Length: 232
Image 1 (tube, helix red, strand yellow):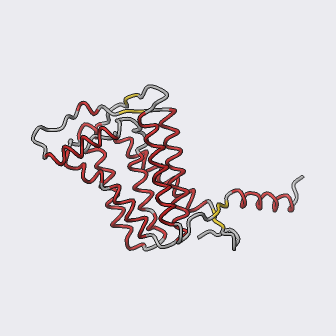
Image 2: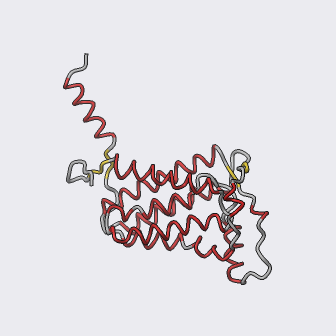
Image 3: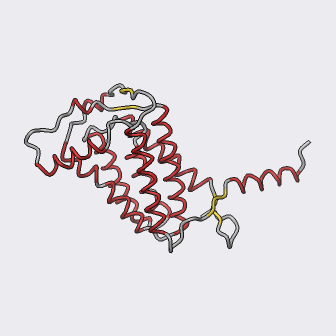
């Protein structure tokens, strides 16, 4: 027979299990950001270039066939890297940065695990670059295709990462959220116009961003050495 004391103990245990330490401070913000993005890049590139199983093609949806190949949209695609840095540096709340660090790293880890277990690939060969493409855009696009193999498709980490990053401004500086959410959406759409991803990858990426946002911004609490668990 369960008692009130047992329930109280169970609740205390649950709170402790879902309480995470605050790792990012105003002093180590830049170092923490660098390490986070560096580790995420290593994780992604490892599964991107070395697969355990043979990557499979996914069926094309009607939207995949209807969306045109727009090589110049590669500039929107690679603006992701500026996007990350700008938002991270603009974030003022260390609580927010801690939530972002945990959610971002968890997103990367789970996505890479999916890539290892169920690798998918995209038929880029169907979309050769036009001969009259400007040399600089050609260089950027070819460099992208060499660096980023056509695997690690579903869910799109490009999409999930930009949406999760834009959600930083749901918590603070809310007037900035529409701008960065729109920018993130353009980046997400560019994964289709550059023929880097299937439409289902985009939807799965958005779903992943929402799941990890909910977990680390709404479920987990955070604690500092000087205080009890905080839910902010």
